[in-house]
Amino acid sequence: MTSRAVSVAIIGAGFGGLAAAIELDRHGIHDYTVFERGDSAGGVWRANSYPGAACDVPSPIYSLSYALETEWSRRFGTQPEIHRYLVHTADQYGVTPRIRFNTDVTSAAFDEESGRWRVETADGAITHFDALICATGQLSRPKLPELEGMDTFGGVQFHSAEWDHSVDLTGKRVAVVGSGASAVQVVPAIVDQVEKLSVVQRSAYWVGNKWDRRTNPTVRRLLGTIPGLARWQHNLEWLWYESRAPFVARWAEPVQIGFELWLKFKIRREIRDPALRAAVTPKYRFGCNRVLLSNAWYPALDRDQVTLHSHGVERVTEHGLLLSDGTEVAADVIVWCTGFTASEYLAPMDITGRDGRNLHAEWKSGPYAHLGITVSGYPNLFLMFGPNTGSITNTITFMLEKQARYSRMAIERIAERGGWLDVRREAQDAYNEQLQNTLQRTVFTSGCPGWYHTDEGKVIAVWPGSHVGYARATRAVDFSQYEHGGTREAMAER
Image 1 (tube, rainbow, N blue to C red):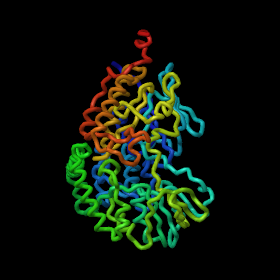
Image 2: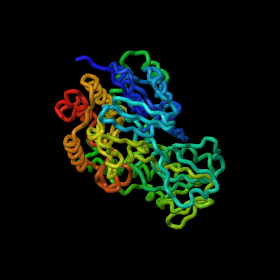
Image 3: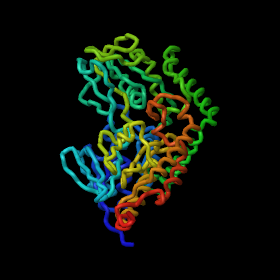
Image 4: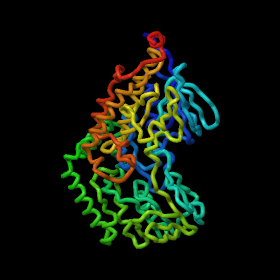
């Protein structure tokens, strides 16, 4: 059967968007456009340039498997390096000329009559595409708290993902609100620069050792010259991380307790003050929230000029923060390390599907999708890093490659037959019921804080199995689970 040309819109030029674009291009689908709201490729690694920003997954596996980099300066890549890698990869695979930079997509609506997506950008431009791939990620929109008095603060304030590099922190009183992944990197990076540092902890995280090191120049040279050596390094690291997948199960609780004992020993070793030790020790099971990596977090908190506060912010004042226990925290600069709107997938972009349905309205109680990729009622829409595909035990780049492959196979079907594909509601519901049943047998439903679940307790962010299992589940598209509409044959059947 002769295939027709299909046009594809890809929203986002981070790891997910580039993986999708390269997958299409490598398989002969060249009519695609990437919309990127920033001025370069890179996604979160372009935006998050705060001091100390780095990855907590080793660089040999935090790369696209067909674009392995051998010149990482450290085992765990820094933000500038990862950003450069993504820009270079976009150039290397010919994606850059297809990217519309500084272009923010505000809405996308499916027209059932034409079987195409109407994509509108912030400048009012409207373009139509046969398929839509959303690669906006979970960690793309900074979340600021809505607190009384934020507009009255007399100093400088900004979110860690929107770091103001014009502000000199030397000799300043700085308040860091939050104790998650960004704060764990920011605080050690600025502690020697500031006069006084106040850390407002929302909840304690388990923080493990970061087995980081500078890479050896000779080893880098060998990786770049000996055929297959970089691939061997990648595969070995990947298998080591994949071996951790079983430990998220409830039956692995003895192992989880063992990790907790080890990390409590780390806290005792790195913090002198017993009260501070107690404050930073989580009260939930190891693994049910993100496990952070740092060798400098606890020693930084133990410094004389650092104070940890375990009560939340009540309001912002002209001179700093007022905490819920009545403590006043004086500050010249407030850094909001308050995370992202991780549960608000695709927001604030407005997505309209068949019969005028609105995706955010349907996702009001929590997002869901079939395999984390397709959503019933939204034909020819494919998600990268969609609901329940967050990588906890291994690398997200592997998941993204599998999602890109699945999307590409579906788009090839559209090219062959025309029309549109829409996952059937019953297939989607059956998948999500099985998924939630599996999650009930994991540590993620043992009761813990964080953004992995909704306020009602439904886990929406993480994949509960092995990465091999996800690859198996997405290795082929079961088209019997999809309605194929918009073709002449389908119209005749109606």
